[in-house]
Structures are given as structure tokens and as C-alpha cells.
Length: 85
Image 1 (cartoon, rainbow, N blue to C red):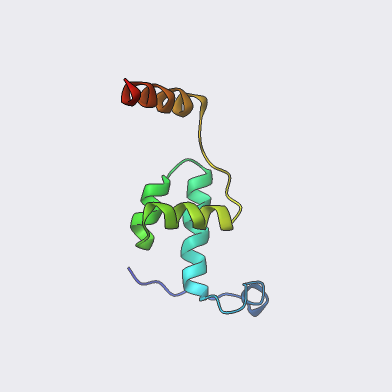
Image 2: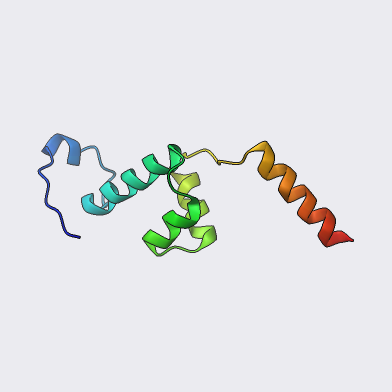
């Protein structure tokens, strides 16, 4: 889908130098949805054409906290225990 929006010059001036405004907009939407729990890191990577580690690096560079629950830790611990048997 292609959309056109008007963006104030002042807002464009807030972007880091060399960044493409359209890409920054898409990324901002994806990061917002990630923070709201509506999309996973895998979904972000898929939409941006990034691999797992590239996506993790992007999230880290943008200061997005890792969404890793106590349940995730428990599941990973059990998986490691099973692997080591």
C-alpha cells in the first residue's frame, strides 16, 4: 500500500541525519506496536527484511527493552535442561 502524508519540516528536522523519513515512519509504527505487545520481534524482522540478530540489534540500538517474561525464562531453562540430558 502506498500512502502520502504531510509532515511538518520541524518533525523531519528531528530525524537523525541520513535517515529516510518514510522508513523512519514505518519503523516508528513497528516499534510502537512492539511496545504495545501487538507484534513480535520476528514480525518486525519479517516486515523489514531483517534476520533474527539484525532485528535484535535494531531493537537494542533504538533503546527498546527486551520483552522477556518470567514464563519465557522458565521455558528456556526447561529447554536447556532437556537439551543437556
